[in-house]
Image (cartoon, rainbow, N blue to C red):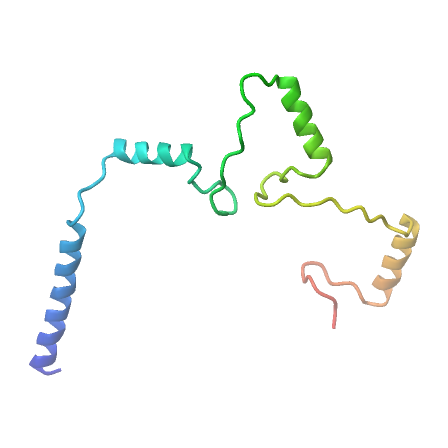
Amino acid sequence: MSSKAILVAALAVAGTLAWQAVSAQASAPVTREQRKAETAAANKSGQLTPPGYGSAPQTKPAATGPGTSRDARKAETSAAGKSGQLTPAGQGGVPQSKSTATSTQTRADRKAETASAAKSGQLAPAGEGGPKK
């Protein structure tokens, strides 16, 4: 390698390191108390991302108020659960509607169908997750 190439490479590295040092000192460090205050304010305004799947921040539901009794809140929640409006635990996001489809086969019919599929080699081998080709 020629001395010019080494000099150019050294200047490029020095320039990059100098730029990082200057830009790192451009803003004053934030204290722990300031960070906690910012986080508390964002939490109150509903700007924090909820835990789970990382969906967008959601606005908090309207408070029920001090006049609502515990029994009334429990009744509202129970009615929302029965109508399928509650979000399943750990899924976050839009509530899933319940499926109303029922099977037309009996258990004995399904067992017989599975046994015949196993004899003909149509079932997926354990742990492979797809039909046998």
